[in-house]
Length: 284
Image 1 (cartoon, one colour):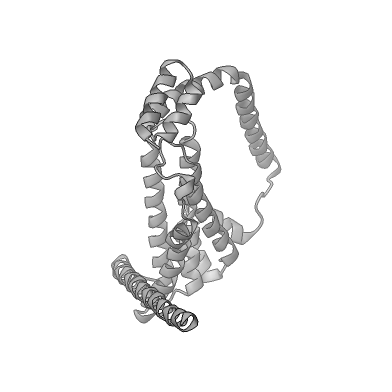
Image 2 (cartoon, one colour; image 1 turned 30 degrees about the horizontal axis):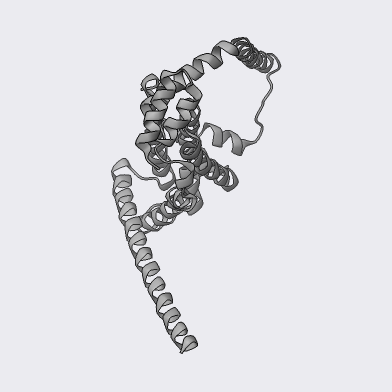
C-alpha cells in the first residue's frame, strides 16, 4: 500500500467536504495534518447537531455532584468506611502522614495494591490502543501486550524485590509488601494521567492541547515524588541514603535484566541444539 496515494486522496476528500472519508484515508496514509483538519470539521458538526443533549448531560452531572455534596454535609455521611481504602485513596495527597500511619499501625492492603497495578497496566494499554490517532503513533495491530506487561507490572515487581534486597543489606527496615504498597499506591496519579490523555486525545487535535504533555509529565513526576517519600518513610532513610539505595536498585535491576537476557539466549540456543540433534536422528 502506497501511503502517498492515500494522503492525496485524503486531501482531495477534504477539499470536497467529505470529512469523514478524509479522516479514514488520512489514517490509512498516516497523514496527521489532514486527519486533524478533517477531525475538527467532523467534531464541529457533531457539536452543532447534539448541543442540546450535551448541555443537558453536563448540567445533570453538575447538579448530581452538587446534590451529593449537600447531602454529605447535611447528614455527615461517611462514604468510605474502610480504613485501608481511605489510606489508599489519600496516600498521594498526604504521603508522609499516610505511609507513616501504615508503617506504625498497619492498614496496607496488598489487594488494593494489585488492583492499582492492574489499573495502571490497563490504562497504559488504553492510552496506546484507544488514544487519538493524531497523538498515538502506534496502532492496535502493533500493540505488544507482553512487552507492555514487562515494562509496567514486571518493572514494579523487579523494583520491589531488588530494592528490598539492597535496602535490607544497608539497614533499611521496610518489608517487601510495604515497598510494593508504596509503589503501587503511587501509581494512581499516573493512571489518572493515562485516562486524561486517552479521553482528551479523542476530542482534540495536537494544536489545541499543548498543555496535555505538561499535565501527564507533572502527574508522572508527582508519582515519583510520592514513591520517594513513601520509601524514605518505610525504610526510615534520609534523602541522601534513599538516593544511594535507589541508584544501587537501578544497577541491580540492570544486572538482573542482563543476566536474564543471557539465560534466555542460552536456553534458546540449547533448545535449538537439541532440536537439531532430534531432527537428525529422526530423519536419518
